[in-house]
Length: 258
Length: 347
Image 1 (cartoon, rainbow over the protein chains, first blue to last red):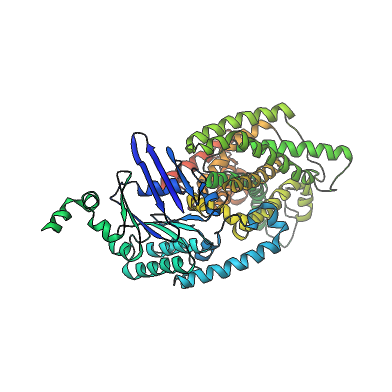
Image 2: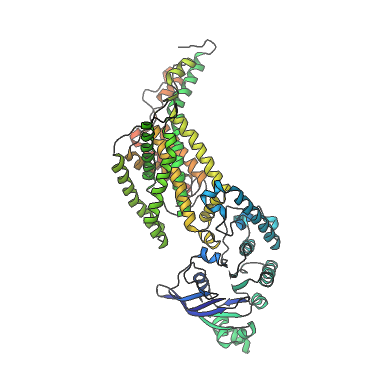
């Protein structure tokens, strides 16, 4: 589905992404792991069009999407969430969801006055959809709350909810489970699995919680120092010497040997 | 002199004091405050959505006013008039269109280049100063640097003489048509703007962009469209504010350059990026500026007993220093509340 070929992104002399090549299979939940500073988030940013690559190519279903702006990628069905949850703080939770998708009739100035009926129809559909999503995520009681007032975990759910407002093809989740308690994490995990099975979403997720990854992801890709180190099932990864050294650290390796 | 036998002398004096205060402070300050508020709204929208302080805003207002004046003259030569109302009211929509065309062209030629390069705000501020000089030159080139009068229709809603005759008070209260129009127009414009920002989808996408640009982009909101709509709305605000100011005072390109200072003070005092703040800031600046530079002797002589009557003018600052007032308030607010009276983005 997504193919990354020899991608580079440098910040001055620092090579955040240093020649990564990887492939995300359609219909998979691919995990992306690696020590801090491995270039995972930068890779996401380049794929999602937030940062232009220094060199290399990204294709989606065979089409070159390298350097496309985020809003154009959105309309191709490529969505992402943020490591630190983003929200439109001054709007209600429901309004936050209803902002998605962009490019609605009402965004054209002219239609504000001359396309009232079409906008109203659209808004009705969106509102029903937003309510459905909120129910799915079990946060429907927060519907009219200002998004800025939500807890960190609830904001993560809202991020996930945003991807459910459209028929996404692939969703990039950046540490969707970080700083979220177990119960909420399970809710998020269930939602991801359901979206994957029922709606055919492809996921690629950066995650640090190995248990969470083990439950959801196959395959798992390991990155270190801007390069892809290994790829395989969670068991294969856990057994990989190189990975243990780079990611889990030598301390754990010694403990494993002991 | 006591014209009404039911009123005592003392009551008359208090009424006279109120009338003087209304005539020289209250009404002018409300009108001036409305003009500043409309100007500050434009500045604050650009700051919130496009993320830079637009120094060219004063001259954008001058351009809007100029376009309105040219169309007004055209209408006057055709014999079109609004009766007691100034013809300029009919011309403002055309002024808005011309200003929108100017701003969109400027954006296309200048700002877009820096936006695509993701230039930091400070560079955009300097760029906007360049744009300011160009616009200023353009306006002076087209209409000349001199004073232009374009107000017609009735000059007063209530004139000082009529007021004196009506009430029998020794002080007169004049309410100019242009002041009335300024206030009414400002109310309509502000109400429309808030309806637009809070209730319409276009307005919401602008607020989304202001709240969190990255997220707006990743929600599929087209930034080019948001930028375009923002410039059009800013053009409407600037042209309206400029034309109203020109109607109320007089039109001279250079005064708009000076107007930039109190407008920025108003936007910052209210909290940059916050529309409610811009309005509040406009009135705070207008009231302080006029109250502090007005000789209060004329009010006090009615209120104080004769022996306490002030011998000086009780003018706290000469009108030459009126811009100092904006800046003093600005500095005080920035020292104690850097994000402005209403929560805006910190400067």
